[in-house]
Length: 583
Image: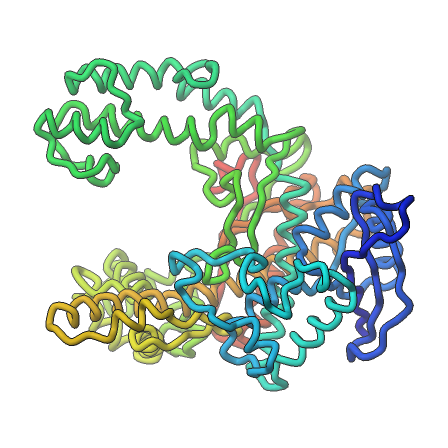
């Protein structure tokens, strides 16, 4: 029987305890969420971490319930690290109330209970700003809501238990409900992994990083002064544009200088600069690349984010509306190739880097059950198979057509190739076009497990209420834009679900397949995740076993998602001494 461990804030009444930095109440529930066990009252993050050790030993399958994994689990890891333990604290299962609330708020398959009606009240796409940017913290909305946990009255363990019950009651006992439960469990498992990866960090060689910076930019300078090579380029750009002292970091100044020299540009983006015929273009593009390195991963970044030979990113689980992760500072999801050479294992260890090959079209094949596309997936290179099936062996055309179908490219080469793709894979293309039509008409779309797009807001709906020909044309453009978004959401969101399953199962396998090694510091560790790529840091003698865990976890993720599908999800795996050697 599964036990639930509910963690919540506790109002300290005893004056002698008011100075404690943190406090918590832990209570146990049985699996039907009806009987509450005797509570344990714990004051202080260190005591909470100690209690967690006892609980995980006595109840290894217990599911921890809390308002926010990144808050509670991070605090427990920090407190635990201050004590001397052979094995670091590791929570196996959790239910994150905040992440689950965000899923249920939009989920098409959730029952329309009063709880769901309340948390989804007045929520639509316009609450998110850009469609692709998911609101990661819902606690600043609905200030008068009954269900907001940041309020003092809702900070008790009773509130956490009540919301847990309300969330579970909103999930129907149907196949769709089972998939939604699986998504909720995977999202919370992902939050555990993300917290651990951020806390323990990615191995990073600081000296190698500094060497890259000096080779590329020149020696480190004081803040506010460009490194020597960057400064030399800035001066060359000013000379070529006959503008001494030009600041190339100012887009406005740069555009004006370019225009004065007869270079027709409206912005300073590299896409607009490429192809222009002037001696300044090449050094300017080089400057932009170097400046990006200086500002995004320069010495300041190194001193801020790398400590004791580890890069400590801040992942945001579900940070993008499709379910993909984002990062809050540090740029964990945007480590440039030029810097990856600094990602190196400790002495005697290896990095095992794996990525899922062409994940999104394979997800489309499995979701749609299109036999032709499923057959094309049975090999390492899906695009080559697609090319041989209908594009005369032209892989480039096959790739353009497939990506255009998934991302809604309706003009140019993609549009020309679409009839061939539609003839080859009618079921898969029909699924994409159905999703696009739903978006264009104001409907919502759900991923394979049940993550659902927000409904359109009042501004979008108003844009479709038109009368004049000009307004109708604009409304059509707006509708098609949303159609492209829902079309891609279907595939990218389902691919994010597969990746969540992969990372959750990989973390579990790494935890249990190396228990015979009493030295926890010598066990393989999951250290990095990027959309469809994982990295394990492992002692060299365990590298092949770690690779087997990665491959087994991918196979299990496929089985959880799609059962006994004929679609193949091959991995590209490399055991390397530097991240830059993986590809």
